[in-house]
Amino acid sequence: MEERLTSILSSYKANRDELIPILQQVQEEFGYLPQQAMLDIAQFIGVPESQVYAVATFYAQFRFTPIGRTHVTVCRGTACHVRGAPRILEEVERQLGIKEGETTPDLEYSLETVACIGCCGLSPCIVVNAKVEAKMTPRKVAAIFAKGDETS
Ligand code: FES
Image (cartoon, rainbow, N blue to C red):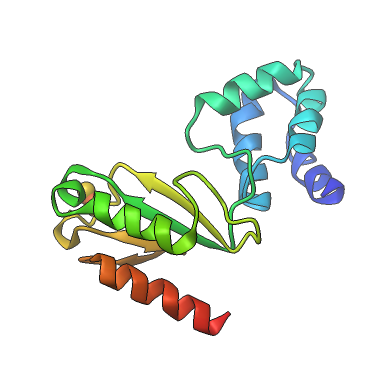
């Protein structure tokens, strides 16, 4: 990790206003913000670690635990909600054995919800590794993850 982080930091000038772009790039590289990286970033820009955490926790885009190889996002926006998103989320949680915001211990799946993914006409939707799955039903959810089991 050290080398990858050093390479990222080397393109910055260690200004405090670079904190958010640095955090974004580190998360892009590692999929989350590892604790050691937070420490190194704090040292690099010369602020207390608590300040880096304060900024990172303020923004919902940052995560502090690793993301699974398969990232599942369930839309809980209004259009999806009225068409059954709560049942979809329940079924995804049941299939994966994790709750929203969690990652499976084998790092295979992580699950989160979002307010709207911009495909309201296809609601209820979920996104599996950037692929939108439209007009979901609990049965379709089960089929998607059963398929995943066969191929793994
Ligand atoms: S509310 Fe789900 S896609 Fe817009």
